Image (cartoon, rainbow, N blue to C red):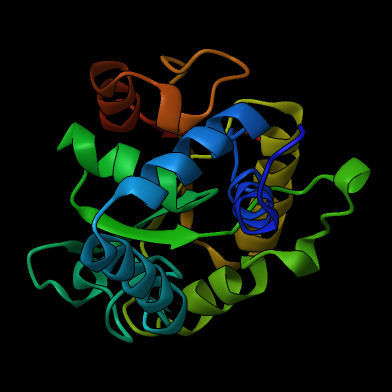
Length: 204
């Protein structure tokens, strides 16, 4: 892409590094920002910097939060003995949107995928096991495995279940209302909500 400005080219290069943004879309965004009022562009820039410098990972569940402990973990209205294990932050949002779940979460930060170089040590699996073993911050009575219905998701489910079995905690998984191969963030709210409500014992 031949551009008349080095500054514009650099902006396009940075914007095209975002997921799902190609060079043409990046150019449209860059030209749009160039024509925006300076104060709006500054506000956008400052907002992005705050995202990087002030956003935290909850020390209990690893969800994103403005504080050290996220509002979900801090809420006294949640079922604190129930922990839903998900792949990423988007999955927390997807489950919350169903309004069918009132427990807590544990965000792994991915799934086991040797082909992509992702091993159990790269994920928040050890902290989940420790959370169940110690009962800190709250005693865990049931762990819901809500990972993608893919080979990688199933592998991660089996691995976690194997680690949790000796601890005597109840382990369940989503009912198969979620189609095989689907990610939670793309499942419709009714299907996902029913899958949570009608969860079944995990059979390793």
